[in-house]
Length: 346
Image (cartoon, rainbow, N blue to C red):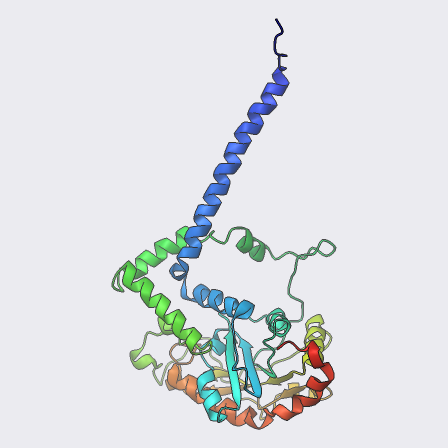
């Protein structure tokens, strides 16, 4: 009678280790799926800035920004000041329907070149880009085996998109207690996000407004305000991001227009009538700089020290239309479209 071969203690140890490791890895994978599913199923428990960022990132990846038949398609990039300061629906109405615009201001985020590249490649090419803030001097970090420029935060966000889930749940529950309860507050966050998308990216940041009528008092000041401190923008034409932007503009027939940002009256010194950027970019015909580096607006147009209320956003949008409306000519792009032909996505 034959007997089964006896396994050595080392072999038995490895089999036991691999079995235990499989159980642990299976448990970790199960927990990852559970938390990732919960994070996906509850998008509106995140802080407002993160909800807006996620919703707009989805629009950039796959949404429809413009009316297909509009001869002029405008996008504006920037941070939360742009998010709360530019009203596309009003801007489009002032054009008489010739313009279709979208507000791609993102909370606490100034990088935009990769987003513009993505829009162009998937067929959502703007004809004009409005810029409040210059491009960065250093390129956005991307992972590459040859050039591993890794952004730790971006890597962690991709590997563990739910890493803030427990914190967000606790904060959401705390806020909901004074806003009608969990269900009512969640529905209100969902409604506000859908309203932002319906308004083509414009969002009034009500959560930071603490004064009656969403207006700063006329005598409101911050200690850091300095009416003698000039605000000057600068942009490097030697930066890699400038080369990327120039290539995009040449290939897709895009015009880039610098427009003023806004400050409270007394926050900085009154600007020079024309930005110094105009002379620096004069040799680049697809770039233009309109107006000064900034506009100073009365306190009544601000809902908090940094962002405009709805009345202020309408005022700022109208001033932008007066400033750049005459430059938004669709025929200026026709030669480029004919030259590119089918290369331009539709």
